[in-house]
Image 1 (cartoon, one colour):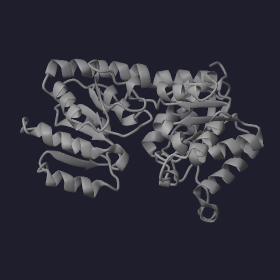
Image 2 (cartoon, helix red, strand yellow; image 1 turned 90 degrees about the vertical axis):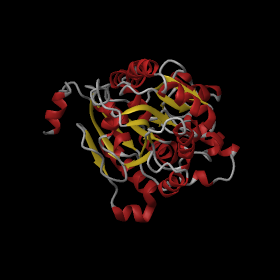
Image 3 (tube, helix red, strand yellow; image 1 turned 90 degrees about the horizontal axis):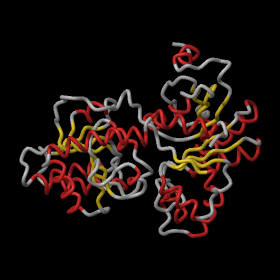
Image 4 (cartoon, helix red, strand yellow; image 1 turned 180 degrees about the vertical axis):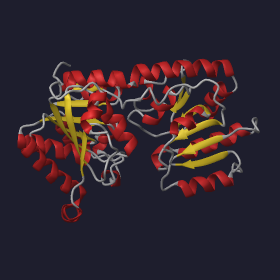
Length: 385
């Protein structure tokens, strides 16, 4: 299908589409879809050019530019993307230049905006850890090498954030903390990553293969050792318990060893990366997230939209979506005993679990649904918010 035909399928005509965006980011395909789909679906948007490290999924109205390999070797990935963004903005004059993550993309977009007079939008997808303490506890591979918080660097990052024309956060906590530190609340918009309701929704009568499922990168921040410990405790009174870990990452070997050491080799299944994640949710009973920090987890939103109650660490933006004794439970970070209690409360009470699941699906649509994200982006990009 041609780009024009795909656009027509979304109700887009050449005469109605006028906005053009230049976006730079390093995200996986699922993240790109969740963040860009509501923007691309807007009739007002003529096209989005994405400058990134590798080709993105094919989406209507999306053009991907990967900087030449030689340029990346000379300038590094961040430098190469800055040059490409600057050249594109000077030649094509987009209406907005957009960054996801502060380092390095936020800095790149700020410079491009200043040098070309283009409006700038920064999306704080990594939560407050992107700027707190100078990013020492963030996922940025350079900043997380800092041994401790660096107050002057935090002040510098906050000063930079305040100078964007618009800021988007994944939840209300990030917005509140930015406002408390002097950012204009009128320029901050809460727009979580969107969930495609046509793909993620409850399915009646599906067979549950897994009592517990988590979807996460296998990295330290996700604290999956807490989940393994909780499964070990739960299994004592539940011989048939089954758990699934979906994802890949550098800690897979250590996690597998921990599972084997705890005698849980027949309980915990490592499923690796799965493109059919909606099918895994349909085959599961409860979703768990043990992260030390998040923005607002896409996996959490998708699982709840699929009708799974959630038990999550009480961090970052989790309270925007997970409500205690309504659609799941939040537990204190690192408290495995409380994690076990919350999981038991859901797993051992089927009527409660089913009620939580129905409520979770509705709440996910109300907080992270694609339709809601489209409307919020429409107002932002058209200057109506």
